[in-house]
Length: 329
Image (cartoon, rainbow, N blue to C red; front, side, top):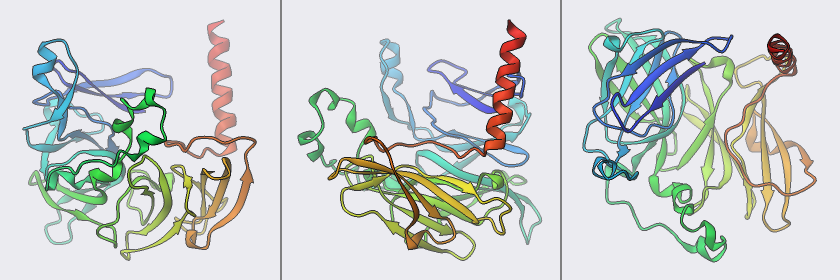
């Protein structure tokens, strides 16, 4: 398990590794220049990638014992270090001003001309920092959402105003430079987030990714996109009006014949019938619609952050938990 933590006091970030026995086996500080507010991280086969981006604690508020986030005046950077690297081995790569809520995947490759080692990083860049100023958000939700949630809802709603787009960064480990960054969605203005891919390819070169389409003014998803990152093409499934899906999980087929040979599993809520379903797509062709719809006994909210775990791994994890508990008795 790779993890990071962050603090309003220096050192502002630590990075660590936990082994299968739940022991911290590596723990180093990451030399950030300000108390940043990262949300995600990524990794390749040999390296770990951490964020030093545009959102940080307001330091003037911190001096008063208050907590508030603000846009940082510091350059936006990614911190890259070897998996078990020291603080002194961290390399910073400057990028265009942004914040990234979620990454997809990262991998290593050789540059075909220079033969330099390159790290490729894919995630959802918030392009709102390119300007013009952030538009006034749609607040029509106040007529629907209970007043007790009005104070916190703007934090989680209207993700579309952040202009999140599927983006790629490439870093040259030899020169220490960001050699390329730009959108990799074939529809350049399409706003997506909360992406998934076949986890068998985590930290490796991969071809397919699946993103959620954002519902304007809400933290809701009105469809799914399959990206072919090799050919630069995509296919889409759009939900009917007032039906919203959750962030999906990719479930590989037994004995898969290709990277995308599997299923996308999501939960869909119908706000008109006030019902919910577990909906399953053939990941080879999501545009053809679900191959299975399972009615749930009651309506659930749309959600994020889940993963598919094969039964054999669940059984193995269950045995480990039972053995760990027994050893403590």
